[in-house]
Amino acid sequence: MPVRLPEQLSQLRPYVPGIPIEEVQQEFGISEIVKLASNENPLGPSPLALQAIVDFARYGSLYPDAGCVELKSLLASHVGLPTSQISVSNGSDEMIHLLSLLLLRPGDNIVMGDPGFSRYESEALAAGAQTRKVSLDENARHDVSAMLAAIDNNTRIVWLANPNNPTGTILRRSEVGALIENVPEHTLTVLDEAYFEFATDSEYPSSVDYIRSGKQVVGLRTFSKTYGLAGLRVGYAMGPERMIDAVERVRAPFNVNALAQRAAIAALSDTKHLTAAVDINKAGNERLHRFLSERGYRVFESYANFVWYDMGFPTQDFCRQLLMRGVIVRPGSVFGYDNHIRVSIGTDAELDAFETAFDAILQESVRA
Ligand code: PMP
Image (cartoon, rainbow, N blue to C red; front, side, top):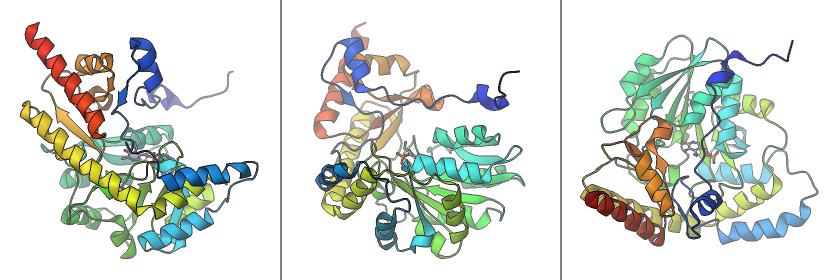
């Protein structure tokens, strides 16, 4: 008898990442590639983080600080919670894994929005749990009453990505409050705030407020987006002490590597770089929104560093034509929405390349 593997394995699909730049260079023989597919920071890491990586590389033979003590203490003052309510992870992806590992067993289920971030479902499957996907409303926003209606006695986690990936839409304070107030006691609400710093709306809520008032809420944040450290892998969870203590017990001892810790510590102090990332994003968001709307496509209101829009026809071929012109975007089919595209917000030069390629394809299709 071969070693037994879990039954649900056949349903588990490996994560589909944005196509790597090198692959497009090789396939199409083009050197200039613009990658607007993975919601990365077009400014790169903060110069302070770069310096920290160089300065600390020489200590690479030593194990990292297993408790992320310095980073955790800076995060505690940054968000205004005690260190006992914060746990640091290898990207927020790892925290999604740890929470799923802790809470999900066969027979349990999770509730999430559709389209939504695929890791919630994959982790549920890996744990042998079911996923209840709740369609977003007509404006591609989470539907609080439908999500509440989907919760049953076996629901352990309700995932709310706010802003949502791939749509960029947010729920406002009153809506998130209505969800949290009505989620039953046996269900943890996770507010995934991967794009938190981009969402500057005055009615955009912070998970910290709910955690401070004693709700069963965990907030997730990351250094991958506004802080430009996606390749270094640092995320963190904030929550009730009981939940954070549980996560701390199941995580691997050295889950955040030493250079990632130093880079995150440095990046946290670089408010100039953060502000520049948010400002560039705001301008790029408005620009993309205008460009796509002017061409007659439905663009959803985004509070993140990407834009989700509907072309009204299957977009896989369009995305391939963009690829042939050196522009990588994320086809909606990855999220089960064939007519949509998600474009990450880049620098002006990157958006120039996107817009030029876009219009060239439209021109060609008119001629054909
Ligand atoms: N949550 C959401 C909603 C995301 O979009 C992402 C990034 N794709 C993550 C979590 C994971 O980010 P990271 O692991 O890089 O922190």
